Image (cartoon, rainbow, N blue to C red; front, side, top):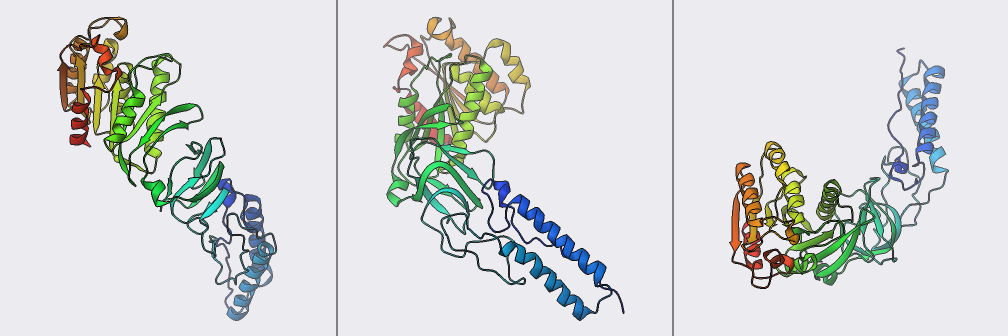
Length: 399
């Protein structure tokens, strides 16, 4: 009679510990490892003691080994992670699923913890109650978290989620239709230390989004970040005006801008296929860098009275594969050398920047406004003024 060798190596547990959420049943890494050892010892026992076997006896031996392996798991604690507290019933070897799924209906309200999606947390829009602290949300076992301000308005758990975990968020509940449609202006904190004003228009989204990079350096904020954010919201765009740190170095400023753009594109109600940037003064260099070399597809860029340092123009001209976004350049005729602009003739600086962009294949438009009557030409962009109609027309055409 032919010998029948038996292998038993299909998974019986889910390693939830890798997601930082602990385990359910035999879900933790250590318990999963002990189960592997148990399965191997069961197989060895069959192979060493029961060979040769008749097919009928071998089949009984396989089920006996499976029952032994499962009994060690099912006899342990079966406390479920999540809003559903019902224990998982012991399943037969032929019906037990490799990945545990909650059998009860998903809860519409739940506190911080780790949950399966959609078994324990249904897909949909949620908001947290707020705890007076920054709220941290981890997706699919990631070790990096999205940060949400206290009482942050709706977050979307969509089909891309399989595991949801949060800390310091309080109680999550289903967002009402009113909350989903209501506009807001909110100071947000991201990456622990950075902040900015987020301005969301009415509607469910997703929205075309525009980020404003202010002027100034070393703690000085130039331009009109808050006013621009609100004007974008009123025009139907998701506006974001991040404020950079006090570090005056270009590298630090670039890092701030890249972090801000990453945060903006992580928001569920942002349409990442329709992204725009606005930069003023110092923000022009940072905006140009992000659009030319940064991640993501940026369709529209507005550069207001700023440029690229002469020593960097050749570096930018020789780097990258070109400049794919459409660009609107704005400057006032009387933006002449002064302390406001680093003693530069900004009309010449902006023209040099247009030449660089043209050489990179960008679609550019330059508007030189008549002398600003309220003061020096650089200060024309300290508020949302007459030039804003040109900005909105450009954004409408490109986004």
